[in-house]
Amino acid sequence: MFEDVAIGDELPEIVKKPDTRQLVMYAGASQDFVAIHYDQNVAQEAGHPKVIIHGALKSAWLGQLVTTWMGVNGRLLELDVSYRAIDFPGETLTCIGKVIDTRIEDGVGLVELEIGLNNSEGASSTPGRALVSLPTRAAN
Amino acid sequence: MTTSPSSGDTVISEKLRSFIGLESIAVMYEIERHAVQRFACAIGDTNPLYTDREFAQATSYGGVIAPPTFLRSLLPGDYPKLYPEPFAHILDGGSKYRYNEPVRVGDRITVVRKISDLFEKHGRMGTMLFKISEINYTNQESRLVAVQTTTTITYGMGEKDSGVGDH
Image (cartoon, rainbow over all chains, first blue to last red; front, side, top):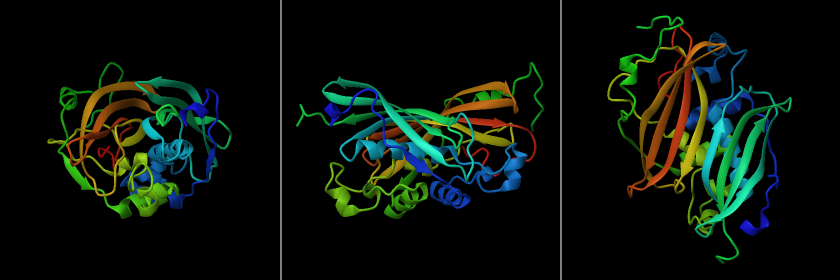
């Protein structure tokens, strides 16, 4: 419920440890066959030390972070993700989020979240934000 | 067709600039439940909303929906003319999604993309071309269900990577 959420609340973390197999699965499922995600030579030619994780897969995890937290009665309205740094298979990546604003607009309970993905060193590689609506007690 | 850009030059030719606002050829996708299941499995999201019909029917969604970024798998079509990509390598800069409603299994979603801006920056990879694209997803009832705004970065000379120009 919207009333149960407060600014500063932290979302339960989601930890991902992707391997190259998951990158191949994601390439197939998303139809993204850019070769830097599965071909070592192409990745190096493009200036990377090895194959890199699809940015969009990181977005998918951040989407999972938010939708898991909001539950089936929440609605995801906005999801913004920036790929500031590259991440690699084999790393441990942690999806984090916290509530930065709550407000009611036109009777709808809105919650704004700051979200992001931290790499193995704890550095943020993928900052983002999300806006969700949650049911209010007043409307029930 | 590519010329090495030196300082003072721009890679954004008149021809490239003519793509701003041009719509891609519309492509329609029927949202099939196994495609949704495969996507949820690939990202490692076990939410039953994406796979379990009985569970999903009992929720406020009333049926199986797709994960929010499933839209990525609904690739836009080509532009009516060949996009003259000047660079060989590609990086995804990010996405902004705006959702009006979820995508449901059984929907027929029409995808249209257009470039809203092109600009260049100079960084450690040399000159980089930034392309901002807006992708509209419209359902079988002509409702705009979502918009994804993407930032695509291309850079570097040489043989083009497979997939460059598709994004």
